[in-house]
Image 1: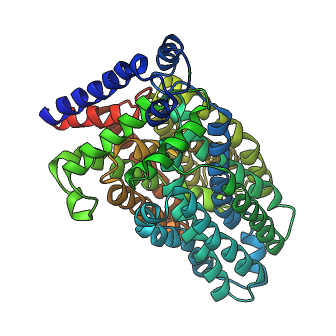
Image 2: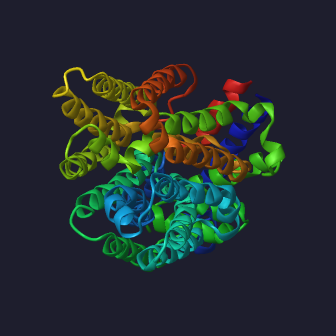
Length: 499
């Protein structure tokens, strides 16, 4: 509590010192030093008030966010590839169920490898250069898949693609959370999930129309375009400040907030928060397991654990198999999913900063649980030979409902919250642990999914529905609402809760 009070007092003194200097030192050097534009005192004061809380959304913020989430589009292409290409690959390369399960799940295993190093790489290279690093893996992976002649090369390409996707899953939400104004931060980070769904939807549609090798080339193209676009966006101001590059931090902030905006208050707040976090300790993994980080760590790890154990990755990766097992035409089913999931994700992007994280999370979990329960009933009826005409209908509704409602909330919101709740001094280690949790359990689910589907599909989806029900309880009692708060305000809120 004393640390928090001293921090607030320090921020107040910084703000007052800047305002006190305004009328006394109107020369250009001082204005440049404090980050103020050359305006009258009244104009500067008004501008400071107008931008209090980082309220301005500029074209630079929009462009930077769009370029960043283009990496999520590439990730979505990778996730959707295994469903659309399943029949073609198994036929051309004569793969068994076990071999194709390995191919499908090795993306998440690669994601696990990427996640292990994601935080450290982002800290060393910076957010922008790390995204370039990610695309090196994705581009290589797509080329290897397109040219593969056997299962080994196919798996190697998928593994490389997974490493890139795993690195992306950490750096994209973190980058957007660090550049976006607080009142739209949720929507902007949720655009990560929107673009991922656009990639999945694209591959669900064209996967029914083109051969799997050509589909891999289609996945290669947006990766190359993304590399080119990354040269036109600024680095994260918070990462620059963490590295002691104050001038670059102010320059990046000015570019993001607009040339006529006073960014001195925001820059000082970032610097002071970093100074306080440095007093709290370093970013080593051992530093993470302390009482003051227990609450945010429980939230981050818990949400990722529940996200994957809801069966989301398995349903997305093997949607075609689910439709076929339920007697519903897979081409029609995946096309319907592709048509609906993008508008639903767009709706989530719009309402996440209106309804808040908690409400949208619980709504998404409830709908996913009902969809999984419906699939359990559907396959249960099929196994007993009861009402066979209902199985295809229930299967279509269940798969559609599960994928769409996941995209609307539980798919993107844990990544938003992960990017918000950890202070800069432990963001590397905490973000790495949370991302590894997501990819590790994602790999377990995707690898075992086809085996469990053949063993007892009804029981598997009943378990998934119970996990979704528990997720509602977890969110209700443990997850705080972060809507409308700056990253620094969220740290103060969580610190108060621990104390």
